[in-house]
Image (cartoon, rainbow, N blue to C red; front, side, top):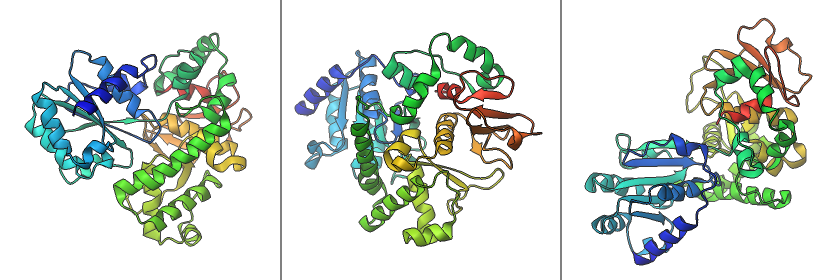
Length: 395
């Protein structure tokens, strides 16, 4: 226990506090059990440590659940010892690496009423389907990749406001006029496409892409494996599936053809697509009014963010897919997305958006109510033509 406390105090003291992710302000710390979910590499550990820094008056303990301490000790015993010595805030990192996490966290919550627990896990994990029921106890929050707005703060030291979808739809011209006096959005957007969605870019693109490919492999080989227990042969097929998709996005799946190509039966293929989506490596969408069933195939597939295009697809980058994945990544935080009969995206069953370059034709949305053209390579729009970069300020 003493060694854990020493390591914890050191990590908490050293965590940077000059930049906080968007999610920090959304967390209601009055809850005693909080789950922070997200893909590997998005900054969950940093967020967890920053939370401890935010409450210096509380006796806090940060523990990684793959620590060797748990070779001969269990989580419940650790919590009991910490609680008895005045512990108030227990921070647990990567609970999916601990076999009995759900049952023991439930017991900790029930037995130690003055102890708050905040834990992180892979986005693949469904915390409400563990062996113990946490649905009435845990409040969960989802941490996405860096937004374009966060990239500007973190890497370029440019602070911009968070916008709502309504702000953009109804006031995009005035907002753009105000913001482009402060910075040149197109100067930074291309760089964001290439290296801006994860906080560990350090200046060299090839090193970053290799690190990102390593992260993808760890998600497939470690995170998915620890949560789902998939056979290694099928992990290899998941990798092949991801690379096939990366070379063809935006992808309208032919399940029979794809099943033969990857050598997976239909049900396993659809389950694999769902796993890649939960792991935040791809995004999928279905047509409006179509029921979302676990066994229904998605109608369109993208890579989850622009950087994955450069790391995985490399020379086969489709600029249209790049723009659409940027748009999907940002609007999906607060809006329900489906595929309309005409146009690229239908948001909240109300607004239709067609995404493209600055010379994109309006023909796809002609005559449609509440329809907008979202254009890359412009810094200012008028009427129903909106610059793509503005959607990067949604979180």
